Image (cartoon, rainbow, N blue to C red):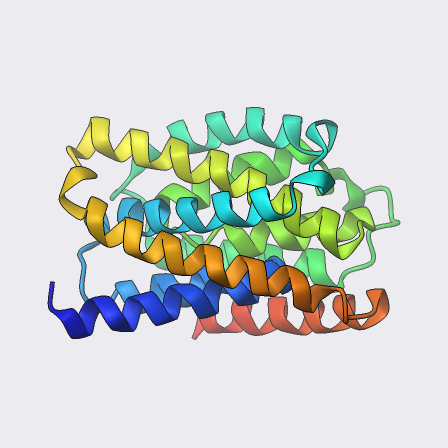
Length: 237
């Protein structure tokens, strides 16, 4: 890896971690798109997961006082089933179909009123965990999906950011392990690169926590809904 390559991704890690530390979403997908220009899918997905794992560790640590185990435990359990199903099917399901499914689900959670009983059936931890765990293995863009679901729980910005980060830690860790076992991905080969990005990501998380205190609850969710919609459209087009 060239020095220019490392510098570029170090700056990107800082900025994407800052964005996600304020709105709980956006950074992961931006990093995924950037990495996709240089790596094949079997390397891209676990490498992106390792970078995002480090950034989410930073974010969850910075917001640790807002962590709530009861809020995410069922999501984590369901993630295991989704991720294992995905790794067994990796390469056999059309990525385009999956992207449309994920983008549609994000938009659904973001804009459709979920007080209707029939519609609210999918508004549960198990569905969120399974589909996001599945999506994480296939395309890596599972962060917006989890955020769009957790947004419906009427959480404060800090609680949303902290617990979304904790879910991402688990999902990215599981994804890396599966790719190391099934596709012989070597984490050691990229360890120094990941550590450099992790340091910059931690700095972004610290700044993000300072900035989030200046954003009102109402404005936070307006911007979050618009950002989720934009990310879903980026996935589609």
